[in-house]
Image (cartoon, rainbow, N blue to C red; front, top):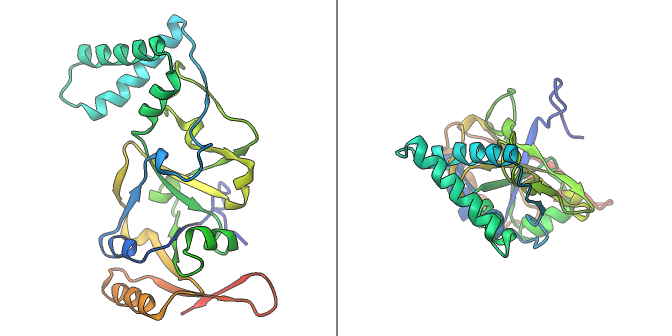
Length: 256
């Protein structure tokens, strides 16, 4: 059963499946995760919204403001006139492009995404993302409210591509409809996503990493390496071992 925050039905823990333990060293010892570009994902149907390129003056001014907010954070040395000119240049390029989707995806590719799940014992996810149960599953705490992983947002599963209005005045999280929408075929993942403004590494508070589950088929060499890293980690975390249930198609997860 998934434990939820009492106040907002948000999972108290979120999980990240992984396949190679060399990725763990940076997470355990440096408290850093890696946010991927949306276009490094394995589902070609993701991040392909239907674009609604409105062109009213109100929509255009709203988009200039939205782009300006993004550009201001990236190019801190630019003055306001330069920020507006660059925003207008981007808008004009999209309006005149024979392939606006290509321009939109170029903008979206600047984002970073870290995928998590509300489930720690899903057999399909262990098989697909956990190296056929030879990998691991990280356990992150989302408590207290407002903490680092509490900023993750729930993925919506739908039958149709999302509609993205590029020129919407109050859309401060441009591209959110694309990043947080997947096909209903992926519903079993119960996915949540943490987003950043750019792909790359993010530092997380050490105390938010609560535990680590070792796959039921993990080799002993990998297990011993993980235990050695955890011995010098501050603070150390709980280590769990997954095992195959004797009668049912499910995993048992116990303290190591």
